[in-house]
Amino acid sequence: MHHGATPSVFRNAAKLRASMTETECILWNYLKTKPQGYKFRRQHPIAGYVLDFYCHKLKLSIEIDGGYHLKPEQIEKDKERTTYLKDIGISELRFTNDQVLNEFKGLIDHINSILRAGTL
Image (cartoon, rainbow, N blue to C red; front, side, top):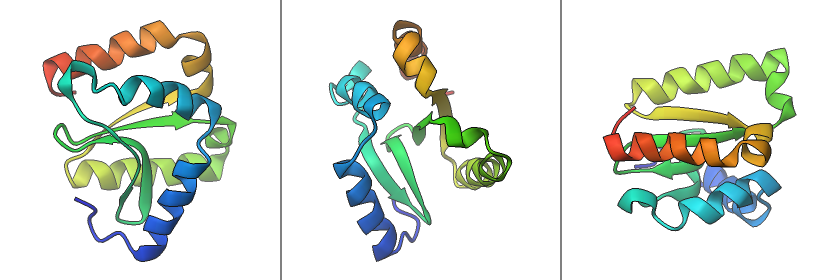
């Protein structure tokens, strides 16, 4: 379930849980209600990564991207991470902070349609 995440990745995940961003808190307030009956974990360690939100049953990661994800080096790191997750069977949804703050209903509708389908 953690694909070899090291103790340092678990410590980092715990720190991230204790200091979630505003947009992560907003989405977590929804995901913790177990939408469509699916349980999500927040700041879940997988290998060398920490997933913002993870549903083990669906093997689904949901990521909230802040502005630093627009930097070229971060874009490359995100691509590598997405490829790794895909290779181990985890699908990924990515949303921006702006989408969480300004398009929340549409974002939730999109997540719910995927949860109802049980796959991406």
